[in-house]
Image (tube, rainbow, N blue to C red):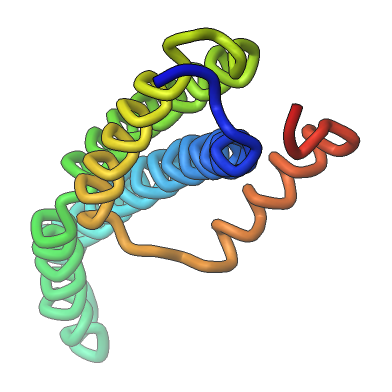
Length: 165
């Protein structure tokens, strides 16, 4: 055990970049789930207010369809909000963002010490952490376009950085 080989250094670089991409991806997904939940809550409130108005107002007969339609929309939005479990997904994404970000920081710290005597066991430990995080990440759907967006973002910030030391 000792310093990292050239192959391990290349792998370390790729893993570091990948961890940063995933951290950004899960931060974005957290925001998306949160916005969707907010939208569902506000829409439910809006349509339930409309339902109350329609029920209590003396509407002409030609608007008789409005009461059941608004009640149905309100019920559907409420059910959708419960079924989608956006607050749970928001919390999961926030946790995954934190853990991937921390892993990226650990990869970066190792990148700065690839020639230390304990670099190899540290690298193996980080790879094991990554495998565990990858498994935990399976509960959130993969959105390839969003991953590509964050890949371009991370790579643009790392442009010109060496692929290995």
